[in-house]
Length: 448
Image 1 (cartoon, helix red, strand yellow):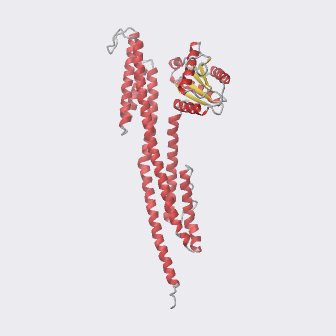
Image 2: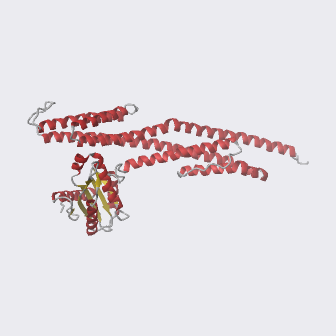
């Protein structure tokens, strides 16, 4: 019995049926992926990006609120205090437009503490002038006690601002992480889906493979490469010619749009990271970055040469602010930071703003004698600075230096910082504009 043979037309119909089925399946997968991309892109555009932008604006407002708090605490004029208080109230009202109960409550607490600071400042002035207190403070109360209450109110307000900043940074990090994870998940789905689509055409004849190479494989490979570029935060590359298949053209456009969203998200993350680790006025590392760096440096330096830190305090800086204003004071701090940045430090050194008019330098692989020489060089450079004021005069600065060296791994960060701080105050007591060295490890609490 002869075996039944398949006719060419049957084979053609079978191949055509397979092509139709494949086309339907591929089109369905494409539409599902496209709908998923479109849905996620719309959600990102309408919800996530506005939320990230709102958090960025709130971060700027919190930084402004912190600056105003420092200004009202340092202010000595009642009218200036009132102006700053009004600015703080305006910022507080701005938080009420955001549906964030923690920020609203925190800003209200800051506004209340601001009122307390202004009230206590006025009471202290009344007591010093021998006038009766406007709030009924007892006449026997010492103005210094009122100043202590003012400092406590300021510390509470700054703690609230720091809490608000930490909460906002955490919220922004969560939003950014969720969005990045969703983009990676969608990219993975796209890769899996299109790899499956590629497996079927590979089984067709050579002629179909040639056609698929130009109209199917090339756009898909380009899409996969763009997805990989998105995962590496690289710039996506658009096709020179739009794909012949409309679905592939839509995918290319969607991936390009996704790449732009990913780039925007990456830049936003970089901004948030900079706000968390960099001092906005001087561009130096902030205190948190310094503390983390010092802890890491001490933990990894067992058996290596000495590590030194140099604490620097600009002399009589309060009088600079009182005489020339905070703009000139900020200009002076920026000039000192520029001197610190431009000195030829070792590659493993860190320069940071410790707070207010204080700076700190970490010197790794540096002996005490080398650290003293570098501190003296820096002291002379600061002494040679000339700051132009609004009145057209030149302002000269000096600075006091406290230096401490750790020569074995048992020194805790707090010990070496305390030693350098003690040496700094010793420099202040010895007439300022000099370098003092703390005693060697083992007696870090005593500054020489």
